[in-house]
Length: 105
Image (cartoon, rainbow, N blue to C red; front, side, top):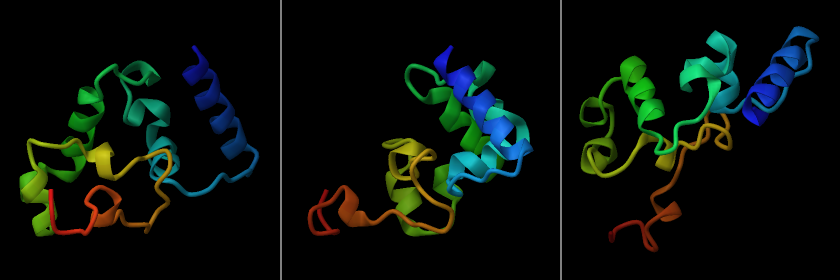
C-alpha cells in the first residue's frame, strides 16, 4: 500500500516537472511506473521477480560486459550491486563495496 502511494506521488512529481535524483529506479519508473520492475508495483519478498525483470531487458549476468558479471552469476542478484533506489545513473558500484581489498571474496 505504501509502495503504491510512493509510486503515485513520484508519478505526480513527474507530471508537474518535479524531478527527483536520477536513480536507476527513477529512469525505469518513467517507462511504466513501478510495474517496470515490480509485479503489481509491489516489491517481491525475495527479489527474484525484480532480478528476472532486469535480465529480461539487459540479458543474463553471465553474458553482460565485464568479467565481474560472469564471476558473480548465480551468486548475486542485480540489485545486490546496482541498488536501483539508491544508485544514481552513471554511478558504478565498486568491488570495495563488498570486498575489503577488492581482490578477496
